[in-house]
Length: 376
Image (cartoon, rainbow, N blue to C red; front, side):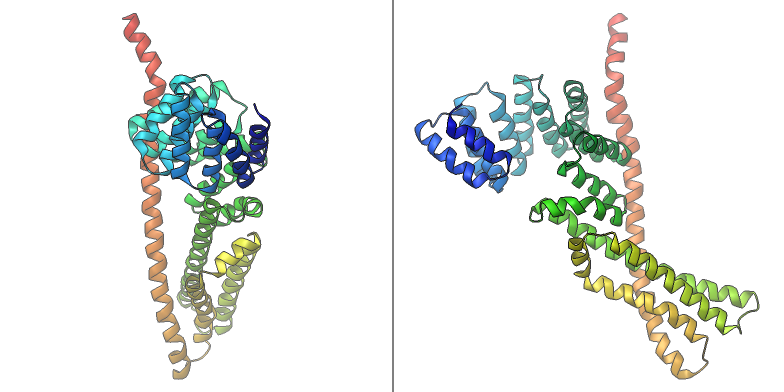
């Protein structure tokens, strides 16, 4: 390995792909068929998000060394980023065929198969994941790949366990922390997802993937705030109706006290959850002004219901009634969000059971059934 290639590799390890590319330009000027130089250049393009150029460099490396697995791995990654899924799977399979005994080829092939998404592809990905675990049980990226597989087949418990194992092996693994946040987010746990993303955002505040996940977390967190606001005023109405049923309708102090208690509980819980978010995520939450305004309407309705029974004046009714109408409209929006979440949850449960039988059980039964057929 030449000195400039060594320097480029060291620079890539610390994320300085611009300087690494300069070193590689000098190296490739004198050795244009250098497989390692071309592969490292492809990695530079990958870190820069230039996937077309990454593919060009990877294909030059493949042409220079068609029986070397690394160029095929890089080509598979580039093709996947360019949404050329079938070609990405083929390149990943070629890398596995050339080097079946290293975990890296299996991990890249798994990602390509997950992008394809068919049942047969998921079965192949599951087989590859088991092979990678056998080859490198102490490698965090193997467990990250297994976690992505379990996410694809809607098994959040298994995915969470895989990412937890990756973090146990490497507590600073950004991929595992980000993917754990995605699992929590898909389960509707926006605050917990925000906590998972806190350190990732601090380390890589400009990385596009983490920013997208952070924005999605903020949107869902603000929506949950609105939904709990709806629950708070509906709960207040039910309490006041219960007072009426118990013959305490004239006790306005009880009504007002109950509404203020509900409001304090809502605001206290919201404040505690808000404080658990990182400063960056708090800023993203505040950017959802429309949803926060609707949450404010729901919160204002809670004491308004208590005050409504405090006075029988027409003026009080005219003030409170529009607020109740607005809260009802926001409540309908909350119900639609809850309906959508329920439908997604049912869909995930169905997919989990379907894939458990068509992917996991199918693969695990394979060797035993083959033995029975051979022995028969």
